[in-house]
Image (cartoon, rainbow, N blue to C red; front, side, top):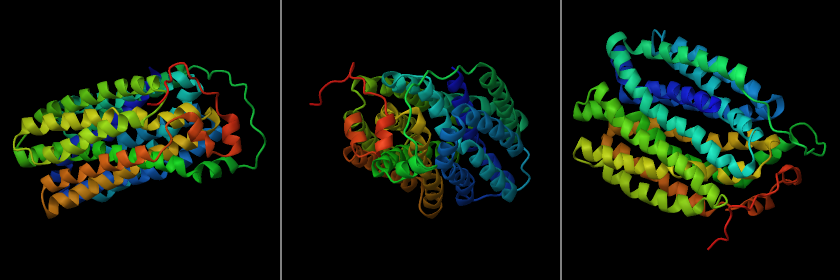
Length: 407
């Protein structure tokens, strides 16, 4: 529940910009390309911090890093509501990204330290369904705030919620489960270097890039598209975006339970689900009506969200708490690169051509995910076969209770 709340605030803070971007664009007279840059600079800073954040979490503790990140980004959220110019907004967005960037690997480490390998993806699916529920809550809450008090009020309100969650985490987070494994001694940084050089982790990160290209591309530009192309106001756009948000929340939970039931074999889920998304996105891009656009977006988001937990399953089920910070940082880094690419590229395409071309570009995401699903190990044994000796020594024994032989 505590991690769910922290992730909910994390994601809501990030999503606010997508729903106030038209208001910010009007106030500071920004083009679509400049608006895309406002979104992308956050992801640039966020991506840069993923691996260093994982290193820090492994060395000084996941709990400490989670609390530091939550406190720092809550301050940045409040300050964003005070931005006085385009340049100031960019600087605050960078600081915001740096603060939030260390959170995902630290939060993953906190979960792994407090769960057994065979239950991690179900637990993580429940926790990260908060992202999709935040995608439902944020527009519904932001729209009336912006209408009544302006876009700045949204940031100040979310910051207040951040303070509440920070206090709850600080007081109530339980202790880690006992871990009796001991690692052989090594020079400082040796494990980090081994993980960074492990090519298979980067292939999983590329799969996360493909998934995130869809999610961040749609969440960044759909509200602006509905306003500019169809005259849909912010209230209505928020209600419409709640539909794919609820679908994604359900799919994230289902995907986590499903992949635990297959022993972590992600290819069985990723290839067919991303195949559906690859077909739905280009059709959606050329939909003539708002209803058809939202229906196809819901199909694409549901299919993609089914893959969220499966993409992370093998590394998170296989690695020890001692290495999960850096490893998860690598995975999330891949996803955040998509957060840099999608908003800016789509903004440029929308200015140069049309939103139809910009949304068609997103079909590249599921193709990348399907290819990487076929190029990554499907179980713990195969995954660890190419790992460093210390990584294999520390890894928990695989649980085969729910595993089935591959067809």
